[in-house]
Image (cartoon, rainbow, N blue to C red):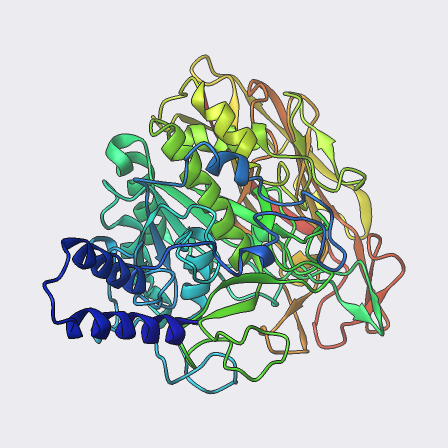
Length: 576
């Protein structure tokens, strides 16, 4: 079609140029409009019909009608994310892509390679070892803010945003990671982070969410957007798939989003993934730290249509009969990597509707307006404030229409980060007996006149177990209103993400858990911490009471059936 338009344009130019009589001024205008249309075409986006995450008509395999982000009603109000600046912190981005370049901003872009390496049009990401880069970031950027109505590709959830690219994924540097969080925060509304600690190990991550990174996020939260706070959206993680026994998925898990020191931090919004049927994507990690869910590849196998590196540089290199013939786009994007920019795009719509929404406002607003997807799932609970919560979904599917409506009349909570820390007691003992569901229970009395309503809870815990495995533990925190957050469950660990060899899980040595579960609940009263060991080692195998009768071979773990020891714990409650 582009070639046909170009031939037609050249023909008209030649026709006008060859006329012998004096040209009509109207001809110049027509020529100018034709040239503009060829350079910056307008018209319906041809791939929008396949972007079910934005408008789900129920015509994809296994889909549920209207199971989407509910953005169309917001767009109809003229709200497209205009004036909102986002950064995509990733492996780069095709900054010249036909469906992104209009929204791309050099003002908020940072090159951490020193070589202006943001994407390659010759090295792809489809074939292992090809050395492609920028593919992931290009697809992320498209989900969030691809240009609309340019007769090309599809569109983003917030097609009016400005996007800065930061290629931290091409360097292995905690310094660069922190820098990307804190640069230009005065002007950066949203920071999208579809990355995190490697999935598939079951181990907790002390490294990426270090003090340097935390300080950088704190800077953005406290000073970003003229004190209203930069919003950090974070992928909840793709390690949620349970262990298989033949063709059966067992209850035995390894990763949980609360094992990621970035995704469980107070300063970020962790996002889970659900499919076109509204149900949890099998790979999406559970966690008490999750805020909301957004749509991505689910269990029906239908992924996300978005931008891809131009030509042969991306995921779509023309070697699949089910992908688009136009290799500038792909229909294979997936993971919480795709869910996160969708949620971030919804946040951009909210910020256009009400630019005064603060970071604290956004957390509570999204929790209150999220939609209860998969309503028959048994994991749903209702907290004491009447908000629905599920460890698979957070507060539910992000809902742009409801959120924007609420934002327009929102009374701000402010953005002063108010928190109080209390040390937990050990009056119930410190020994966690082996294979005993009763476990150990201790309390912390929280009493504050300056903070009476919860917005987030961080629990720091120190448990030692010289000859035991921390993966045996179930750790639960119960609020004064009797709402329970599950912080850790018995799970297995591997030596690495590519290893099939079981390994001892990392000890919870001053580990920080996060919980959104208690948003809007009363803060004052007794908070209860319960730790129980649900597992037993016998004859070279491990069996846990929550594993449905399945066991794993653990001959190489060198563990015994001794008790764990609770050394200390504390709560840091954020709120108002």
